[in-house]
Length: 293
Image (cartoon, rainbow, N blue to C red; front, top):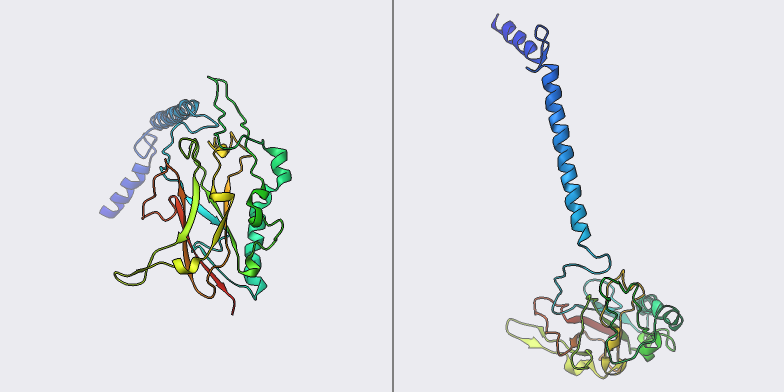
């Protein structure tokens, strides 16, 4: 009998035909609750939309309003086969080094002289190319300076389409990451790249450098300079045709059939040396091995 009573009670709670209540509320009560939540969520959506609109009015399409700029920009190399930054090939096996030559060709195509002449401006060397806005008048789009492929000379791939890889004199191209508004160098002294043997650990308290293996190097442009005329960078949208300056280093007589650990770093009076914890802050390390037997 009690079970029948409980069952009847649940039925009346879900729908009471006498009071015409559904789950304890009349239709008008449910309607008011539904209306409240509809109005409440419309208000929340409107408040969110208004907040987003106000925030977007403070943003500039061409320049970040807030920027936590790194003190030391990162550096990367080309070519690179993977994230380990190891360049290993055999001069006797074309397939092992041709992929590096193809990667450099693809990377340098936007730097072809004809494209640079068509899109970019011939700037005055050794001085910043400043294009500031005038009050509320935006100076956009901004011009960019030409970085012609021929600047890289023996590492341009024009006279030697294999970039020296086939004869054991490979070219490595280095670029500095883009940082909006950065003015590297000071008092007219342009930042420059230097490469040397990297110190690496071989035991608990033992370190080694491959100084005797690295051999002679030559830089393009001369002295490995990032010319001041390519700075500052104003952003991808404001400076759509911007071409990052490059530095190429050619290894002329590096030791073959052995691993050679190399580190290239940026040198500038106003760019601090990066932390040892960040291997790409102002420097880049890689391993080069050229097999000939």
